[in-house]
Image (cartoon, rainbow, N blue to C red; front, side, top):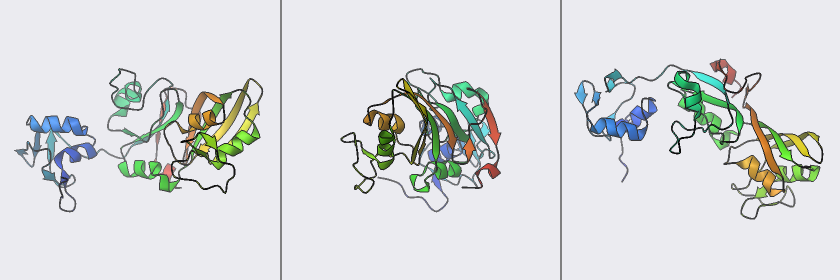
Length: 253
């Protein structure tokens, strides 16, 4: 049964997670081990109510405070995963960033084989605004697909594809559901019988959506790079490089 808290208060384990001090599981272990104090007293109950802004919380000897506002644009290398730790031992974006990732959380994910723009921030509200599907924030990708991708294929991806049957809808007027795969825009840059280069825009980051869209029209994605997320562009960042962003960069949101 879920526990209800007074306004402004949350479970101690959640407060530590919200303050980016530790994950929920890490916080639970530390609390039960007596490594967390609230207002000078050791607390061993992970569900103890606290106010993250008003209570003085000490985690393993250090004061737990909300990190200052910081957001970066990172060129995620292909072959890294967008998690803080990977149970399979694969290299993560946090491994790639090292100490530069201190206090940051990734905004959404890019799969192992996808490279390009990844935003990381200390601002959980900004992350929510960027990832919430109802805000329809544009994600733009440069796509290379094997073979010839026709105008009809592009139109089908824009009209939407039912993943349960993996076939394009017959018209834009056909009834669609929230589970449909759909590109907001598909534009061909150049093509030949060997491969096609395109720019694809999405309004929602569903799991492997672009790869699944192309597979549904019989095309295989061989290279996928995110080049923009909302108002932020990858620009001249090389793989593994990052740059600081300002609040003003997100004013258009």
